[in-house]
Length: 337
Ligand SMILES: [Zn+2]
Image (cartoon, helix red, strand yellow):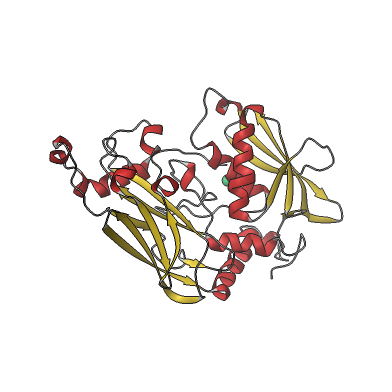
């Protein structure tokens, strides 16, 4: 179950940047003078959010300052460069990492800039206390911001194991799951049937691109009756949910069918900006992920009742990504004691 779609993050965004951004005199001049791009990194700023391991993705969130809507991101920055271990590992045009439509899609005025989102998949050599440097260039002018992170497989696997033992086996494992066993889908390839035609493109994008990216699992749409452990259907209830319906008689920890419901109030013309987030959240439950705590500034899509404004910045933490990898590397019902 997930609710809530307010824009607290955006207002925070406006307030934080307001001090340096509200320059009316600039707007009345024929040309805005060239200056180094102004931006900041907001997440992840500290341990363990900045802990990564092999095959994980670190989502860096920030904010780029600009006079919206007079300026566009291209007016304030030409490109971003990502540097790890003194080596450039990524170069991005603003259109790749800046969400220009954020304010206009939400119909908000008073934005002082745009959200910045960069997924990092390459971390250099393993080690702790590493530096990731993000540079923004405008002509020959450059601003750089550094972020500390840790690339430590053993530590990340330990964090993932703690998460599996305390959360993925159930909220009170001592009482009802003394064997510390997790539930999971039969396979790392998950077939699904969509019974909401309006949502076909959105669901395909959410499962096959977005959830697949963050979980490493593969989703394939099908109409075959014999292979579809996930059925997405419209209902008359409140919001949405994921319900395990089938289990393997030979292994009660193997989910053979999950029903993912979306309330009819969300169907067109009431499409919501956060529908991708809701479908991703419920699919997360279907594959075995529990809720996480809602932490300010965090856009973990399994956080419960967390204020968020738009799906584009949502992610799973590296420890959650690693937990899914570990659970799906073992048979359903494997004991994590
Ligand atoms: Zn939920």
